[in-house]
Image (cartoon, rainbow, N blue to C red; front, side, top):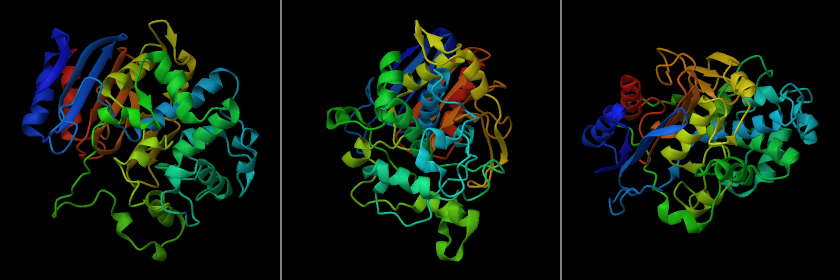
Length: 388
């Protein structure tokens, strides 16, 4: 059922991975761990499709959702390292149109830490616009007045985060963030991490199976069930963050349009091996195998709390550095380490770095479960730390 390799010290991870299939309804998945930049776990198993016709392969990729936010942040931080972007400079220095609607002094730092007050766009947008028109999405964000005074609170920029960071990358570097990701991170590290790709990759993409909530199970996002016509302010923003633009019936997850789109906060595709390599590089000072990803001082800044407390969009505890979710022990831990940082993705996907022990972790799956902490990723992470 499962394939791959495990260092003998990490045999517990293999056992936990197999148990996910036997007891936790895993369909297809992969888990990878690096220690000091060296792979010590690289496992995959199950099926790419719900019909169980296509086995999960070594090079299978799958939607990793919001893990793309952390990797998008690396792109911006690389520009900071090169002196092309300043964290406390106004976004409008790089994107002049952004100065509209009271945002002339809003700093880049607030975009990275979800403090900008731009989790949603108020004006109604055409269905599927986020997949088809980058310019229109960025124009709408430039016109949008913040839903709260920037810096006064924070709230998860669920689907706008990638456009906000990606437009800075485009304005400063000249490349779209999908191209930048592929060339500056994936290509240099030898990692599969893509936001937007052609049909030549479709044969190795795992079908995403949406989470089916039980009849007696409470919704994780009850505010989405409220009529938006009855809402205003941040309460309205919470709904529009997920509902505007509405989805297009022909361009949903698993469609060719979804895979082709440059939608870096939400649709990146990767695998566990690549995620462990990216986060493992951050965990070892920003370099691996002679490849430089990010300077140690910027990694340290990125792993410093910028926003902490109740998330105004999600309505639950959250904690952000510069683009990364940070561990909240006892609430939403990212491993056992006190300084772990990374990002959860929809339905249990997870990638993180533990800089205190030089560990990188990646887990992907194609059957959605709980967001974010799910019995499958909890079991794997516990097995990793139990092995140390």
